[in-house]
Amino acid sequence: MPMHKLLARQIEAAQSAGVVDVSELVRLVSVTYEQQESDRQRSDRSMALMIEELDQLNRRLETLVEDRTTALREREGELRDQNLRFDAALNNMSQGLLMFDHAGRVVISNRRYLEMYALTSEQVRPGRTVQDLLEMRAQNGTFFSNTEKYVETLLATIERGDTFFRLVDLPDGRTIAVCSRPMAGGGWVVTHEDITERRRAEKQIAHMAHHDPLTDLPNRVLLRDRMAQALSGIARGERLAVLYLDLDHFKGVNDSLGHQLGDELLQAVADRLRDCVRPSDTVARIGGDEFAIIQTGVAQINDTAELARTVGEAVRAPYELSGHVVACDSSIGVAMAPDDGIEPEDLLKNADMALYRAKSDGRGTYRFFEPEMDARMKARRALEVDLRDALAGEQFDLLYQPIVGLADGRITCCEALIRWHHPERGMIPPVEFIPIAEEIGLIIPIGEWVIRKACADAARWPNDVKVAVNLSALQVMNQNLVPVLISALATAGLPAQRLEIEITETVLMQNADNTLMALHQLRELGVSISMDDFGTGYSSLSYLHSFPFDKIKIDRCFISGLPQAEDSLAIVRAVTGLAKNLNMKTTAEGVETQEQLDALRALDCTEMQGFLFSRPRRPEEVIKLMRDDSGKKAANG
Image (tube, rainbow, N blue to C red):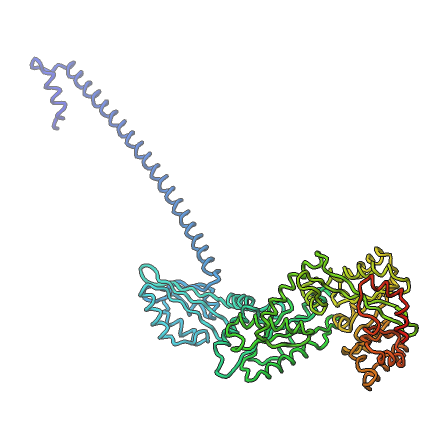
């Protein structure tokens, strides 16, 4: 058996004298064993450390794997949530959406696209071409253009890097905005938006911008556009007419019946105006109670005159509005192109001047523009400015014309007549400034001044003499009329029985119901009510039936023909007989001759008023006349 090399070396080291030193050998062996044990221990310790390090590394790896696994799971959850949100966003868009790759094949589509065109998800699955989709839409009636040409144009636009946009009107009335935008790297995204309601709203906004909201007639903006268009197309020898009209005394309707009924009246007038014109003509509401008509293709001026008469008659007919019978009239101004202008503004301005001429001529009529109207309009505007300062400047005065009883020749009443003393123009008659005062709203404060002044002057007269005051339609319909009258009577200390209110049939026509209510309130106070200018209107007898007037004033047009004119005699005889049966007095206006006076006595008329007895006089002169017996002698003839 061979000896271990290490043992051999140890024995060799123990043979110092040729023999083995056992003690030394044992020592050497012990040292060797100790060294081996130390080496073993070191090796064990190294192994233990290595195992410990490997264990720590393993634990770290396990932790890292666990963390990575958790992170991956979280990332998967986030991706799943993102996909759900993307899916929800994609399928809840108000727009239809498609995405195509560089080859023109569907990558993504949403539910809204399928709903818009009645397609299934199978029909729009990924991989379908745009040509496929259009052909399927053509089959179900949601695409009716040439598919090949459409695709060719689309692809050419996308290749250039431009946006492809189209508005598509579908047979069912929908309008779809299609917008294809190229993507980086090829392909494109398409949105399909249903803009039907938006376009309807835009059309409505555009309509509102050019139409009056109350009557749905064209407004001033659209009127000018149509005038410009019509003027540019006037054929040689043809004319174009512009009729400018407003409603007479419309403000009174608004003040008495309220704006709601006023609006109803404007709507009713608009409907009647539409019925008066041809489809080629235009009716517009300019504002307030003002309307305009463009009449095209006018061969003769008589065509326009006939239209103006037709419009006047249509507007004039009574209206029944919410249980109220309302009557109004219109004044119309007419300008003709090219004679009176070739620009819309010039024609409107000239028609407006003609309108004011119609108003100054008594309203309820029409007038054509004449060049001299421009100067008159400037004068009228200057008069309007001066009129606004006249009341504050104490430029008004009252004259009184006596009314005489035919039985005893005594003065029974005096009618108050306003006069304007203009500082530069002198005396201006009421016929010139009263219509202006009504138009600009000054008739109410001027009327109140007349009432207060007349009551104060009458308080100085004999107790059996009344004072008569004329009221316009605006005054009668004003809600403050009764309080103003009560205040004026109280301030002057004049009994209500000595005040007489005169109204014309026109006043009653403006607003019969409210006017009659106001008259009954005055009657309850003790104020007398007279119908002035009887017989010149449309329904005098019906108004006598609807309200018990105290007096009827027979218009001077019937008196001027006495005693020769048989028709005048018959009319006056009928009126006086009717009044007597109704317990009403009659006053003949405009008596200027003794023959007229004698005829009136024979016809059993109650009173007379006119130059035969006296012209209008100043307050001091009237008082003197009342004390003068010559007045009685003149009345007795």
